[in-house]
Length: 296
Ligand code: NAP
Ligand code: GLV
Image 1 (spheres, rainbow, N blue to C red):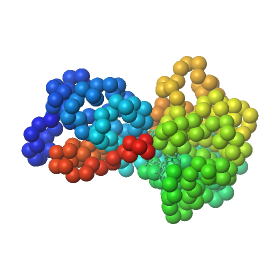
Image 2: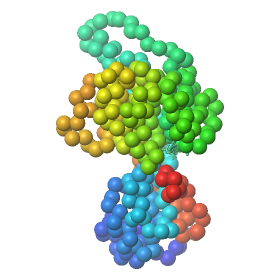
Image 3: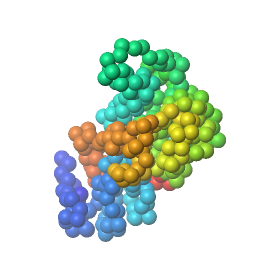
Image 4: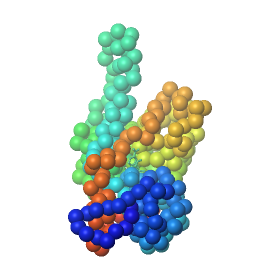
């Protein structure tokens, strides 16, 4: 956005980089997967706003974010609702055996399949923030046993919460379904690997809606092929889109999606971006600030 003398109501002058006008005028930048090298060119930059909920794409280049610049992210109920719906969709698809029923339908076979009752299924959610917290509440409200894992202790009614790396093995062991909604940070990179998958219950189903970097992909394929895990639904992958020869494309027990679980909705996200632009000029504290030291 280009800087202008502040005259309410909010008027923001902007441009799409590199046509963003004089670098002296810029005090805020909206970014997604853009190269961040040019941020240093804006001497008045004070605010970088991620166009998504995650900020790993910025944190990976934190050294390019000038000192003193604040980073914000999107926190939007419209995004949260999409995420919870997506997690529910793939969880129920697995638990209620939709693939088998589709096959039976095509074969014109009228057969009842055995499926577990919600109260007999334990769903573990890695990350109990904006997205994981909502998912935990909704899935718990449907009668499933829900467990949640976070960095610091959390309390959510009806959810068995655990925290810290030392609790991870204990946390994963009883889960029939594991849903990853962690931010990608130094601590969580590759957190779903051969070792942690070996802690999971035999036959557990993995759902990753966070970032591809959370999963060691070859370990996942091996865990499924060995029969430890039942399968996986993955909205995100390490390389997006995956190359043609990626094993996930060909695995019968892996279903991938093109990073669509929860999209940024322009209509509902724009107001918080405008609000932070307003605060930039009034000096009020920003909303949805990312803790740069924590990395999320
Ligand atoms: P958030 O509100 O910041 O919550 C993050 C949660 O993860 C918190 O509960 C946090 O613990 C926990 N956590 C962080 N580091 C941890 C660690 N080392 N060990 C244990 N727990 C840890 O984030 P959010 O808004 O829910 O979003 C989560 C992620 O979803 C985003 O970062 C993004 O990567 C992903 N996402 C994906 C899509 C998609 O379409 N696929 C869309 C939006 C977002 P504390 O509670 O202790 O802080
Ligand atoms: C999407 O992945 C987001 O982080 O908003």
